[in-house]
Length: 173
Length: 173
Image (cartoon, rainbow over all chains, first blue to last red; front, top):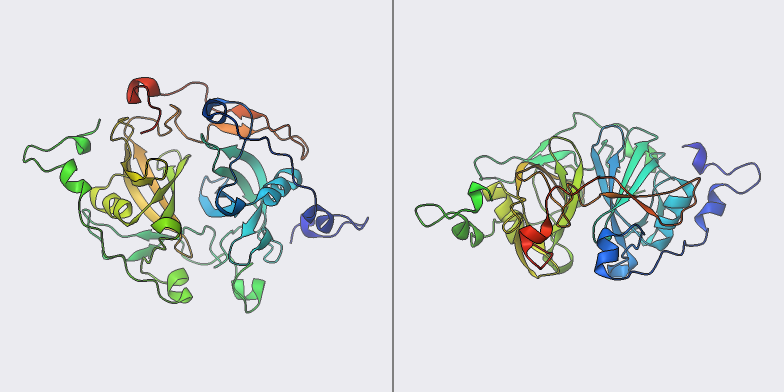
């Protein structure tokens, strides 16, 4: 666990952060402003979510694709730690809250039509994937001359941490 | 335009590729097989689509987030060039077909729960974004001590190509 997830001596700290107000994201305007302007106007689309690519700020490795609602993006901005919306558990997900594998945010980027966020992060625990690997993208499709038997090759030799120990019997954060 | 998009002398070439059959992606099985197994079992979720992160194989820069249906992923595998499903135009999108900014695929990765693809590509035209920049993520949110006025800072000084020239009056591929 990182300091961020400890309750601070004044009784505030993480628990206070979690229920912080949503930021007043600007309303989306014309396409020109969205695509070429200098104001963030994120599109919270299906289910009020915006997809978020998370990349290791040091190695450049892509770690995961997550989803954020307004609260998760607000908390990511105000706390400096990545927050997502867990679609499987249907709840706010402070990355690392249980596993200790948190993500300290260095940069928040947004794409041309502002319907995808890119976080550049530092890993506090050396890993991101809930299966135990550094990146969620630890397997590559084997393709030979445009042909494939759908076989996946493992790109990481071993897990960084033991998810059973981090999460108990449940596998998710 | 790259060679890939020219019709070959035998009259086959790209047009033939476009209507190639979908590959028989394996049926998804138990969570253990999906998350830790060595067989690709992609999840084509909402609308039959799987999100796809595309990364520059040389620089590691994240270029875009696209979406693929079965046909687009099949063609990406068999042709070695990135294909997507354009949600706005509701049609198959051979990246670079009109703009010349194609993506030659070096690696196809998949994440733990196999509901996101990661392509590592080489850019044939030096750019990927339809607005004209190298990456779609050409703007960074300005944050100071957890506070923001939603101002975006441009990370690329100038456009790599002129989209008006590449696409004509329409802005999309």
